[in-house]
Length: 290
Image (tube, rainbow, N blue to C red; front, side):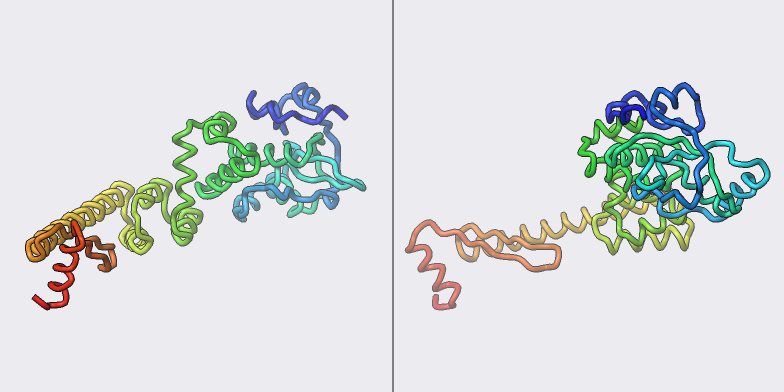
């Protein structure tokens, strides 16, 4: 068996790691052999980022395999006692099981757990139609499990830094909205607009309007913009009100008074004094003794 695939190969492009149906010479150089394997001896990849498979698409692929056979082999790595683990091709594997295939053609690669994780994640990003949240979760795993920076991740998957960042920001959305994006009820454009809404309650309210009123991305952006303008106006009004109260109290106590409040309406009043005599005078005034 050839030496295990090196991690640096990812930087040279996905073909250096995964070409499970491409050039035979590439497969030989990367240490892969094509064999016929008992399908029952294959375990699914625990690092597979895709968590849901479209049943209709699987049935269509199964019909194709039933008519023409499996044209593109899957890719596996060898485990102990004649067992194998999927590296790529889970849709083909699932569809082959649907039509009752007993054996399946596969490329056998040499890879450790770290390399398997990298291959599975990067292969899925590059070659599968993952939904935006699945892509974001995959990016997050690459950052955390393989300790890549955002810039390094962008180089690995062929995306610029801002694109990777935009996907990762989707994970800040409320789970209800993330689920809607995964199910195709809203687009990534809708999600990117909703990220700019601070309060979860407001996010959900606009999300419901997107569904009920069929809002476009542009209309959603306008709603978010209007909400933020309204919030800023309310803050300015509140600051203005506090300023007037500050001034009135400052004149009454003949010293500097500052009022600080939070969005819930609670806050503090700060009264400054220069010396103990001034503090005593303020105390009397506060207690109504003057």
